[in-house]
Length: 228
Image (cartoon, rainbow, N blue to C red; front, side, top):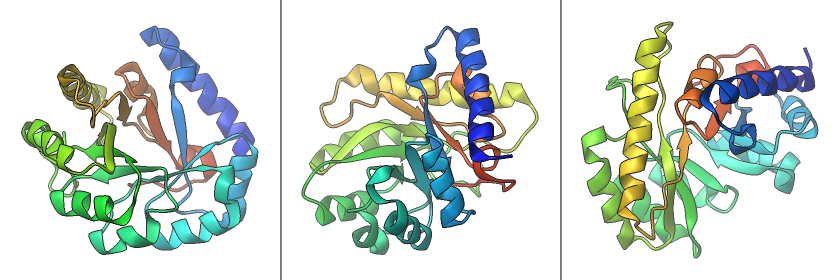
């Protein structure tokens, strides 16, 4: 199927999930995850109406940014090594994987304007997943006030690949509650109004539980399993 056809189906699914949850589909941002596909396929996604593009490797970002550039809003969705911040910081609009002080310090150092960041939370507790433990989120985000070039716009998590919808819902609800707790602080440096959660296999459930940004790879651009 073409990307346009895939996108049409995804939009129908989003509307269905939003109707079920009493939400507006316009409040959902689709991030097209293009890390496993060619430049041509990524361009097809943009030309089909995808405005937000997500990459998780420096090499893929450089390659696609060179060919797509300002036609897209760029999200870095993978683990970002501190030493590579200087290479990506001026190409990206959002970072979805802020999870440690050393990374925050490097981001703050390498730019002269606030960068919109999602703090990554390991809600599921899986050892293979990156991110802060939920109980450490408030202290970490409070500390980020010391870095004026970081703006915490939301939280991000990756759910395990499971068929048990109840487990997934618990994870997404937990992140939603954490977001609400941070919002209640009314911190200037951390408006924390967004939730980046949900991928090809679980984005409808994530939307029902409050996701604002969904990271869609295989369902949109090809039969690849996204991880990020």
